[in-house]
Each structure stands twice: as C-alpha cells, then as structure tokens.
Amino acid sequence: MNKSYESKSAIILLYGSSEFKTLDKKLNGQLDTMCAANSIDSKDTLEVEMTYPSKVNTQAICVIKTDKDSDNDWRNVGGKYYNKYKEQVEHVYFDDEMPKEVYDGAMLSKYSFSKYKTKDTSTYATIHVDDVDTMETLHESVYFSRDLVSEPGNVLYPAEYAKRINDTLSPLGINVKIYHQAQLQEMGLNLLLSVGQGSEKDSYVVVMEHMLGKKEESPIALVGKGVTFDTGGISLKPGRNMGDMKYDMGGSAAVVGAMHAIGKHKLKKNVVGIVGLVENMPDGTAIKPGDIVTSLSGLTVENLNTDAEGRLVLGDILTYVQNEYKPCCIVDLATLTGAIVQTLGHEMAGLFTNSTQWGEDIISAGEEAGEKYFRMPMGENWNKMTDSKIADMQNIGGPYGGSSTAAEFLYRFVDQNTVWAHLDIAGMAWNRTAKDTVPVGAVGFGVGTLFNLVKLSSSCEYHIDESMKY
Image 1: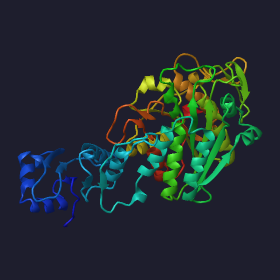
Image 2 (image 1 turned 135 degrees about the vertical axis):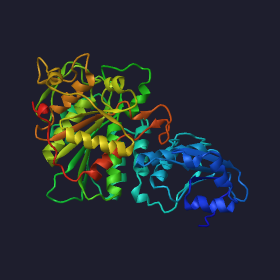
Image 3 (image 1 turned 90 degrees about the vertical axis):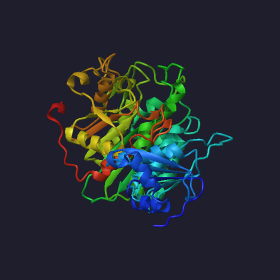
C-alpha cells in the first residue's frame, strides 16, 4: 500500500495493520520501536503519537491499539481522534482497516450549527476514510435531526417544519402527508389543536409512509412530539432558560431523522412516522387551566396545567395512527417531563412500555447506537392518579411520579392489544458538555435507536405483559 497524504495532516493507525507496516517501513522501523517502548503490544487499549515524523509528509502519526468491538465503540474512536486533531491539521486520515463506524463518529463530532453567524472563522479538518459507503452511515440523518432541533422558534414554526420534512424526505421515496389546521379541526384532533390555539401559528400533523415491506405486514409506528416552542402557555414557564424550549420538538426530530435514514437505506420494512407540530403560547385565546377538551379518541381531558402539553399532542396522534394504520408496534418519543431529568439526569432516557420484549429490543437498538435507556415503572396505581373528578382524565397526576403518570396518560390512548413504548428524552435531546461524537447543543438522540429498531425487527410478534392489561 502506497497511500499519499496531504501535508498538514494527522494519520490515525491501528497497531499492526497493513497501513501501519507500510509507514513503519518508510520510517525505518521508528513506529514499531516507539510502540515497543510504550509497551503498546502488551496493552488492550493504548495510543502513542509521533509528531512531525521524518520521511512522511505529515504533522502527526497516532497509533492506537484498542479492544473496542461494538459499532458505537468505533464511532467513539472516530469522534475522539477527530476531535483531538481537527483544529491542529487540515486533514485527518483513518486507517483503512477501521470499520465504517469510525467515519460516522468523526462526522458526528464535526457537526456544528453556525448558519446565523455573520463571521464564522472556525475551520475543521477534512476527514479521510477509504472505501466508505455513505449509504451505510447515519450521520446525514442525525445532522438533519440536529439542524431541526437547533433552529430557533421564529424560524422553525409548524408550517416551516412541515415544509422541511416534505422537501427532505419526499426525494427519498417517503410518502409525506401534511394535514393543516382546518383539516385537523374537521378530523377532530382537538387535544392537539388546544395546545396551539394560543399561537398565531397554525398547527400541523405530518405523516410519513415508508412501505417497502411485505404487503400483509402491519407497520411499525414512530410517533413524535413536535412542540416547536414551548412557553408553557398560561401556566407560563420561568423566564430563565426558556430559550432552550426550542428543542421541545426533539422527539419529532428523532422520528423525522429516523425516517430519513430508513428512506435513504431503502429498508424493506413497513414503517409509518407521525409528528404533531404545534407552538404553545399564552395568548388570550390560549387554553386555560381547568378547560375540558374532547380528544380524537372520544375521551375527555381536564387540562390542569397548560405546560403539560406534549401528552395532549401525542394522545391525538397516537389515536390517529392506530385508527388509520393498525400498527403492530408503536414507539413514541418526547421531551415530556422534567421529572425524568430529575430521576436519570442527562445520562439515560426513560423507557416506559407494556411489553418487556419490545422494551428489551429498544434497549438493544439503543446500545448499538450509543443511546441509553432505563425502564421506568408503570401500573394501575399511577394510571389512577390521572383520573379526573369531572372528566375522563386530567393531564397531570399530582406532585409525585410525574414521568410515570405522564406515561400512563399516554397509555390511555393506546389500544389494549397494541404493543407500545414511550421514550421520555427530556434529558437527552440537548447536550451541555461536549462528548466524543456530540458537540454542545442538539444531539439527534433517538435517530440511531429507531433506525436500528426498524432494521433489526424481524417480526412484530411481541407480547403485552400481563401486569399491563388494565
């Protein structure tokens, strides 16, 4: 192998690879000597660096030996070493014997959202990995999701969001259906509409169909909360950090990003994605605490807190997707509760489900993507906390167990014969500390999980737990 490298570059090598041996020969054995001096051959994980090596037109050679083996491990390798050199050199080369996930990880770490800077002076190194089939990578789909989450509320409001979904997904073969406010009123999605009635921006629902599986197979449904900005409505949030509420549509962005990946990879599966797009504002026409609204399902809901709005959006679109598509399995995602952040911090998302089998598959799909979930409790006691004295149910369940009562609220809109899971990603949609593959800001959390879940699901033969039949 006689690969040529650009000047001002860094080369990331696997110890003992063909590329390592070629460069070592060119350097008269200096690489191997350096590795031996650092005992790299006897360690499971180690790195050594040669700066400005002679006879090689490059700035640094970094040799690593690693015991990493999962796809996510390799993504983190790519992100870690790209981050190490991206501002020091103009090019970063990765060893040809590293898996394609290294490229994905490097690209994920390269992401930045700087479109509103009039002078953006940041420049990052070009990434080089030979023979990478970008059809097999996910970073473009995660980029799309991150861009959506990063946009401010004055730019990404429901109508614009719907347009971007259509413009981006339709060319991939996804059948996009957009329902505007007048249609939603006629259809009876009153819960969703009640959230947006205080905004001058109309509410929308977008359905994304990808039906490349067998005709007789029921689809998997991906459901996302898309509150493009959340003031809390009449139950107004505190002003501090309210600007972060542009990411209250992170669940929908995960669904949209996953549908992008599913369409790009042409998965031979039947999948329907649905997102409810609203803006929650405290206008004089806004829904008031105590108001009662009749949902698409026919259940009546007493709204005791207008800042518990995401579950209203999800309730109606859960009903719609079940009525229209009869899915075998459902997973919904939402930045739903502060309670889940208090419980799990920014380390894991909360998983609520009526099927242990479905939950285990979601956790496995997440592990492959580097996205972690912890199964949280559900049950009749939490369900009863959402009972209302004057309606079928109320949208909050009291001061305790907030994430579980929110999940139980959603469960009331799920057919008792349908396998379902709810992912509360409130602590995971926005990153405050840079990680190997995630800069500070939008994460695109959930895209990888959903893509893997659809890709790896061989059938929908899941069973509902006996304890969840009530």
